[in-house]
Length: 225
Image (cartoon, rainbow, N blue to C red; front, side, top):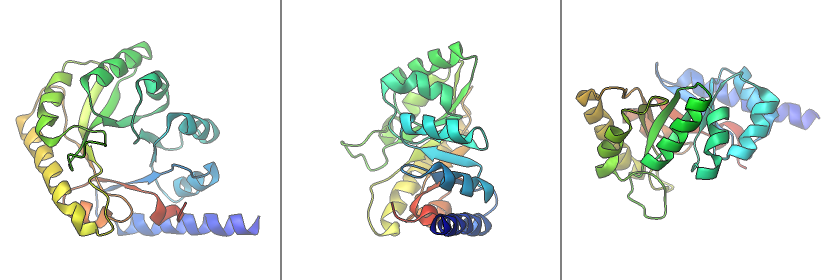
């Protein structure tokens, strides 16, 4: 029990330290995959207001245990058969990457009388094995979503290819920010370029330098899995 208490204290201190270091307007999102509800409660108590999760089923158990003490963001690959549950559980979907998925989500949110904020996931590395929209296709997808009444595009999200060197991620963050800025200047009806979600534990400082205002951090807060 003492070990658990000590670990939770470290988690809480980590979250507080990072929040204190962030520039104004940058949101810390705690990536909670494989973490315990107690750890997530600790970061919420430290001041974290956004919790990200990759898996709908695991998130459901956590949300049921913790409740709406923070905003819950879905940050994994959303499977079609999980859309109904995701629409009910989450406050934002950060990984929308197709019109088909958006139409399903729109229908489920209509049934819930809910408008779901979404981010378009940009496959900035153009990696065939990964989900997300290639950079050259983002604007077309955004335009195809502008008439959906229960899905509201509020920005972009990217992962970028993972490497050990944070600097390797910079070109992918730069490209995603350019798309973000271009879409913002076009002022597409019903579309707001408000959030740019980029950067994880090893790359968030570079992401912030390149314009991210949501960073998704796991290991640097909670420790290794």
